[in-house]
Image (cartoon, rainbow, N blue to C red; front, top):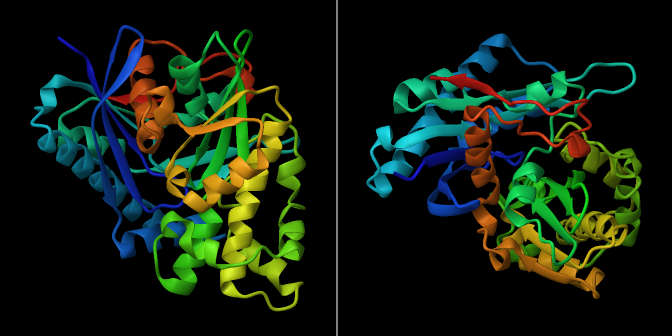
Length: 366
């Protein structure tokens, strides 16, 4: 009988849950089905308030942890119902949870990371063994705790034919370097969709810029782009990871305050170009040949065109071309990580996170 796993992912933009039903056979991941379940406006606002606020109450944290646990469970059950799969046929759920703080270790601090979405509730409500809290074991081993998807990218997409780069554009963007020979590498690049999403949510009350159409209507503002590119994270050496703590509307507005008035559409156009520049600059530093893009940003036509324009000698495609659905790549990665944990195999790449040793990731809720 085939082994089935469910991966659950909610990213930095906190727009909803991606659920992927996956089977792994003959060293290949096959997507059986997938589902996106948007968060209610109230739940998304609660997540953003918790993630962006310097102070929050234990009451808020505990309540949101339980709410998200139930939301993750409901999403997994809806996916199984959609495909008429009984819960007892699923080996495990891998839940990334919702990141509300990520403070990578530095010279003067050990760092910490916190993902919520109570896995006790997921396991109890679905009746399926659940693996969660993946980041903290890597951090305990001296790593950044992120990104974790590169281990799956390496397993699924490494080619002996050529060097490849995989870039996931979620709320944040992260890169995986897959040389044809030798060790993989990877790290967080910086903002993916998070600034574009936040800007359009504030000014047009839309969850995201569909196809990048609002960005396409504006004009690049070179002064703002120059300011954004000064962010110290961008010049930081890998391994490195980041989140909304570093790239958010408060930071953006501080930059805008130093400039003459910039139209809202021009800000959106510049944010799109900023994300493209961060990605293309990182790729140009690598001896790559093929770039595969996944995540929500792969559906932003304006962003994709900007990346291709800046990398004229590269083959730039979505990961669909390589056989992994771009929209569901990250959810599939957490299904795979749950499988690795249950098999007692390490799920981190030390060359990516900077951990001192490979580690079996996550906590298991039977």
